[in-house]
Image 1: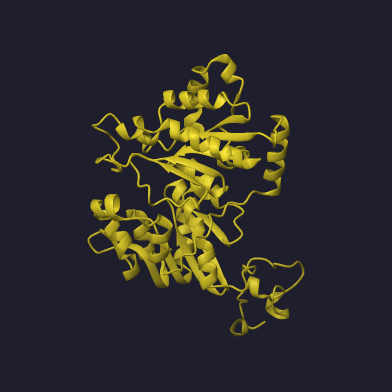
Image 2: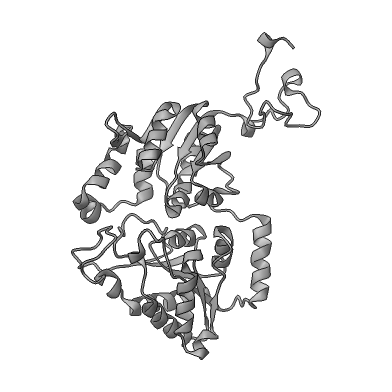
Length: 384
């Protein structure tokens, strides 16, 4: 074959290294996967790096992208810690982690659209470097300041620098706003988190191991959050109080969830419970990784949680969610009509997004625990 006659297939499966179908030469015989679903189409790069919950939330953008660009190839770059969130996602063609090698590869691709939803210097700088006909979201200007890349990103941008707008006026969800940033139609699409067949079997085996009773109502507690904002946590004593209340109802099963950083805290909660209550609580493993944690959470009917990755995972798993809020913004979270948000409406200092509190964390200490118990029990009655 002459060099000048080389025709590279516009196919997702062709990589130029080896045939995508054994003993078939796509260069000479034509593409062996000549169908619409394998056409490259519109090339799109999604830059969503930071905060596990935000990465999971942003998967709800994918259906909107596919509606706008039915024939498309979606690349997604994220931090290594978030990679597993995107694993097995049917709408993402390539997940790349934030490494020098992967960024080098992405710089060589000519994208039709590049999206950056993160307001971080490195994410914005990377959008500057990417070759794309259309760049939407946030970039760096010549002074190294974060600025909007397109007019539709203005509301989100101003929201970040105007506390009155963010904390007092805005009633739009984060997903609504990010759709506007990326010039996509907002249809309240759900998060996308797909279990593999192996994980589905793991869940079934786990249910057998714990003698899962489908007639019971499983109340899950996501007890922790990222160490970046520890003041989002309810106190150990508040968890203990709630668990004691739920333990009075024999129709309820109580389950503790958490990540590796919550292992010690969950054990503290268990240790403070009377022996008869401990016997009614399942403390799930917290050191087996993100996806195994999602497997454990899948058994819950309801998840009680703060504004954390665990909350987003519960939303992604379509659980009924009772979420408490203190320092973070209530309106920005979309729970799709499956749950309730608990917060103090009359606190002038909340929300604040501060890492330290001069007011003894009133937004947490004043959480209406009786309301949480009542909401959970009301919802448990709907199961049967």
